[in-house]
Length: 184
Picture 1 (cartoon, rainbow, N blue to C red):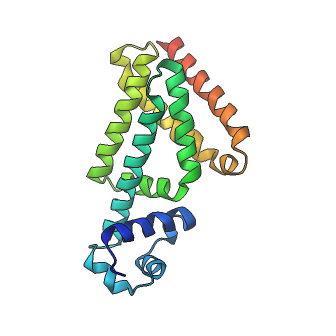
Picture 2 (cartoon, helix red, strand yellow):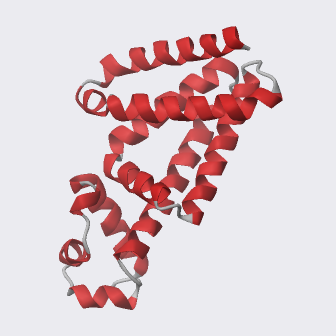
């Protein structure tokens, strides 16, 4: 079987979700694909290159899912749908999310662009909740930080008992939006 870069990327994504970011190495990817580690260099430059590609793939998928769940709805309902999808993505792909965060912290240009696309979605949602356009950027940053913090904090609970976490998420999102409206 001839290995392609896409095969290597899919193996990396699978290993990240199974073992976390620290469980991904060139050796583990090669073993997963049943090839020798040096063969990977025919398709990638380095482990870092591979992880950036995996993070980009994950962030594109996450952004697509977030946009898709908000189609046809607006306001608080759209923010809640996006928040639930965000938590669902983390629950299904915790290792990919960890890889995305790592790439973001490395200040990777491609990940930064994907993050800007995500922020733009949040800004549109904020405006659809009745906030002024000039408040959208600041409030989107608050919402983004909230989603990251709440969802990573609740990840273990969400994996084992999602039915218990989603009502908490809904309450927290409503409280956040109400608080922002009160301050506005």
